Image (cartoon, rainbow over all chains, first blue to last red; front, side):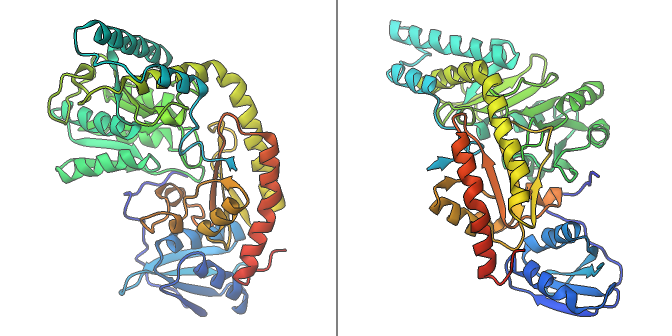
Length: 94
Length: 377
């Protein structure tokens, strides 16, 4: 359960991003807006498809995976964007 | 107004108020005339009484100008005193910012800070912490008794054993528990803050065990066993210790009552409000703190609405912080950082106020969600 990380630097996955069925552009939007957009649109993709949330509010980096845990969807990974922020990938589970 | 922000600052205890007013004219305890001698005698008696609560010798205890100063001096002074042993400091990821900021100063001066992560409840894994402490060159380990944002108790006694085995001093930040819970054994350096237990602002406690290498990182000063520079705030120290003794005497009764109210909030909030996560350990926790996060709502908006309804609470959400970053505690735990509400009950929190809080909260969250187009079931 315990994870080790530097206080300022959260873990990031470097692997290539999988295929994305829907991209939600929440860049420049503050939490909880990116989460609200994700909750409203996840049912627009087929079961087991992947949604990419683009966000640059630091809260989204923690909150999208936490939302997945609470809502029993799957957080596939978070990938750094060249312009700052992340593409946070979520698989629709139900 | 129901005040539910005791973890920020506990209202002044009546015993502290009385002692403060009675001591306002205290003379300089370092001088030799009658009034000064009397001031010194009162200060030393307060030190003995504080030492007894902490489980320390009086000469191990110094009074600082705040809990933050106690942490800064404790961290940097121990690192300086232990410089020959190494330059690594080990700390938990959810420590108070005063610990992490002192560690950042140490890093800027070429030192190393190893931050041990926490699980979902906010607790460090004692095995992982012990392994970090055992690494070569560790000069200091830091761990809080209880987390200030979510209330989770840390495994201080087990970590203290590991520190002793590794020959590494452990700084224990007891800010949220001193006066409420017994001090866990095994500390080498202990820090606390009087206004968290109902003393006045402007008093912290720094205790350094005999045999712990410590050197002041600040210019030399003869006050407080050369540990803390500056003129002692005798009236505030006397008031702080009066409150501490009173709190310890009342702790059993207060803890049982407040903990039952916290249990009620922990049980009721997820039942009354949809899409809520109550965070922190439900059992191994400080008696007075409960924190939850409401999906799809900004923490600032909940705080504003609760304030309008007569409740003073706090939040770790980024929109309520000057930094625009969410709380490092919630981030490290991996729990929702938005829609966050911390309820921390002062000693006189009433059951009626808790019931009224539980009565107004569901509608506040429902309205705020409706305003951003999220329908509550």
